[in-house]
Length: 116
Length: 112
Image (cartoon, rainbow over all chains, first blue to last red):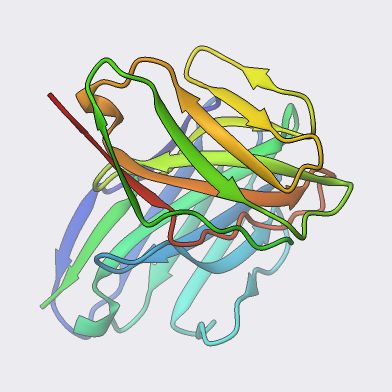
């Protein structure tokens, strides 16, 4: 299967700061990338969908000004949590799909964010 | 996308086959059945998907009933490393840029 990486794998930050998470498709071109969030003992919740070169589409209830998504290339998408607060502490997971892999989504290993 | 129903938890002895059921009675003709799993603190891992024929790969087998209203994921020889949450998801195959939507899944516990 295709490989998706995320960086960093975990991050601790102070309340009010911004944090950027990178998601890379290593061996395929991801025309579409998705960002999910997962709280403890809960399932994955879709936050947004981004197509390369276009603005992201956010799910209802997800603040687009707080969670900035950039998908500038076919192999890289970034999620920036702006002015993070403790309630933003979560497990953030990206996934991609694209040429040669349209039938499935491949997921990154996730980034654990802790906001103090 | 069609809704799925899975048991919240299952146990399996190491070395035995793990059979995970999924009901999707409202599945449409163009919708596929996907299975993913998530090991603790990791991203979901693709396992297998199918339309109506049974499918097998190096990880598992997928058995879909003739009326396509239910399916079973079979891990033929479960190991401790197969302990995870297993998600059954139904979605149209045609690439429309839509994301997989996860339900609560089945927590499979494999013990020695």
